Image 1 (cartoon, rainbow, N blue to C red):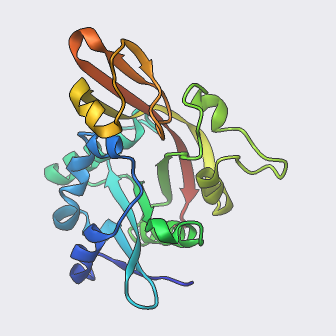
Image 2 (cartoon, rainbow, N blue to C red):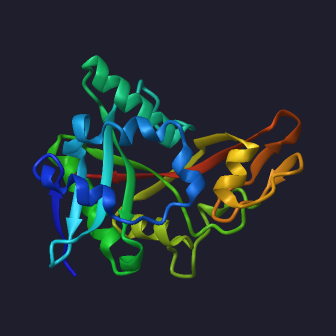
Length: 245
């Protein structure tokens, strides 16, 4: 199915359907404090960099979010996702000219996943970056096929199948689209919370100090019972796409 893909800036009428579209993020991932800096400013500051995909009936079934930012001479920072959002918002507030652009998220309705829509949205995001004059689109990719929280991302990210493509399905989409896996971003996202918050987000007891394996987390969550807090530091994988822009 071919999507009709529009920039949010050109279709402000799609704002409400975009926000209403179901997604498959695990609950704890919704509480990265940096993420709100982007999503809270999508409509007012970054609408040119948000793409909304509709099916033949006009229903919103996918979205692709990106953000222009100032790299500060740091090619691909260790704090990937959090860095590009923070830098992108600050550069926008200061009126600075961005010199780089990063993907933030590609989301597909859960009931449409596995149908090739993510590839269409990724290609459209890359083309949108080119239209805005960027020669590269970088992406701090979340390889959500990783099921062993104990396995280092530095190992998982570069594991390949017999055909030479990544074992991770989402990394495989990027590579098939022409992306190059560059490096791991070891502290791409950070989600801090009280033990009560983590219990609410996960349904787990969080009753002992040490690493806690949380379903769909890419690394263990570090629990500190004595101080009543737990922190999740998520590694992502930097992928670089040439845009031709």
